[in-house]
Image 1 (cartoon, rainbow, N blue to C red):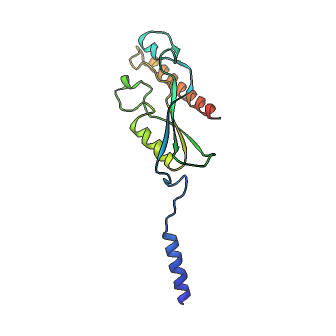
Image 2 (image 1 turned 90 degrees about the vertical axis):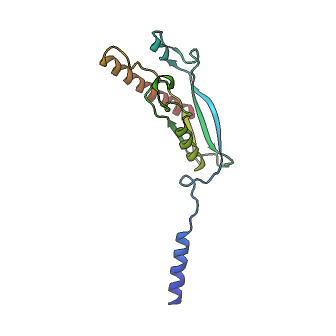
Image 3 (image 1 turned 45 degrees about the horizontal axis):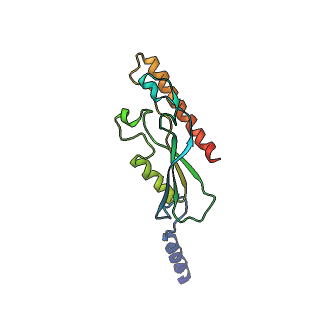
Length: 164
């Protein structure tokens, strides 16, 4: 009978121990961030909002960049990658009137840092923005918004190819 209690107590004790598990728990305390890594050079439609033709993003001073978060001091070389895309409404922050819309938003930094502390590599990407919410007709606004979402998907695919 004593052995049964000893085994039960040991199992209860071992079951209550909490070991940190990589990719589930935050096992690293610090994060290394590499900022403004350019992953693509494409055209931007932001000048079109002012009635100008689209131009390469490097001419407009808006290359497609990303911030890469990695666990500091990690010796693992083959880590899973998360590509994080910020929220927003496809309008630049100066037009959208929101605190959201870039790779360096407070919530994006926090989410990416948490995943990096779990052991992941996280790339927080900026994608092309631009559509005219004040276009003359609903059909034109819808067309522009669908194209903005399409450009965002294409930029996500470009980020995947960059890492491959």
